[in-house]
Length: 454
Image (cartoon, rainbow, N blue to C red):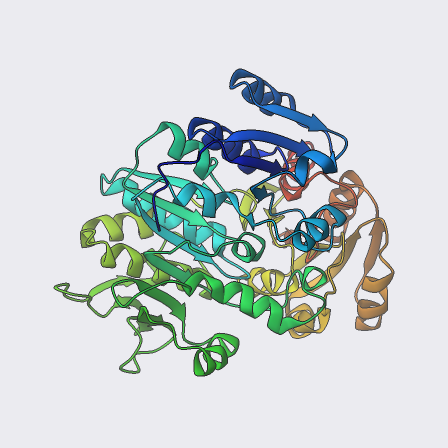
């Protein structure tokens, strides 16, 4: 990580004026850049107001290529794919393209605790933040959750940032270094953005280890076969902190005799917490708890703070979120499950017969991953999407009751009709939300509203 002091009025173009783009534009303006913001879509009113307040030029509904190609450097929204014509033209002109996180890191010496993985990122990021906050550290959230890192760097002073990083953000990070990097798991996701080559996606995830030294930490799930295979080929320079299911002499955290145990880091004596006391239930959440606890120990957080957070953490909205019980039918909102593996984790944690709502924008999904759990735990399926043909092709042979819906109101109604007392209705869609909703948050909020209206 480095600090820039002289920009000599360099021309910065920011593509995309959402949370990250607006933050990057404001930081660039504060640091003396000439800034121009271009968004092919419509910019939300609050972001327009922020740009105007700082005297930053912007356009919406178009890309003025003459101005964009005059840039010395471009900050790109992670949502813009590399195949977009504007990006291809920038690449052809060899104009540097970076992420907001990369840009913001140039102007802070704060410690960066960075979390990625196909599933569990938001929960683990929130959990690490909760632990550090309870410990009294000057810490802030950024990345995929929280506020723009660039905006916080521009106007605030924090000693620690806990950052959730998607593969899209990692794609355009080059000099950035994570002091503590957490890689939870890697399963097929977003393959449409990676030419349907899984290895390209794996490579993107492992970029979280780039630039790390032996003084930095790499925390990872030792039981993930993809991570294990990649580590045989790629040897991170960081100090390794694996976690897993058992005390094998290598895992820093593990489960033994129904206790989640941290084996001791530095001057720490082992910390053990009964699994039944953990706030987050299910095997996948025990992994999230292990990763967060290891990160906290590396940062010398007291064991009492770690225990307090792991046992008292309130959870994350749209991630296995309890909504309500209606006539003894429990409704769970797992709208953030936008890939098949995430749905697998949700089903794995179900303890009652389950009516599963799934569907949306397919990202090259292979639904066979959840076949066993569907047969074992699911009593009915509700498809929620504009096009449910692929779901029918895969699940019609299972012999389960199936309902077709294309709006959330009908999906909740049909799932409730399928359920009996003592059952659970689980919204865990396996798919992105963009066919019917703005995002998974809107999908989850509308689901909760419909449940509460029953």
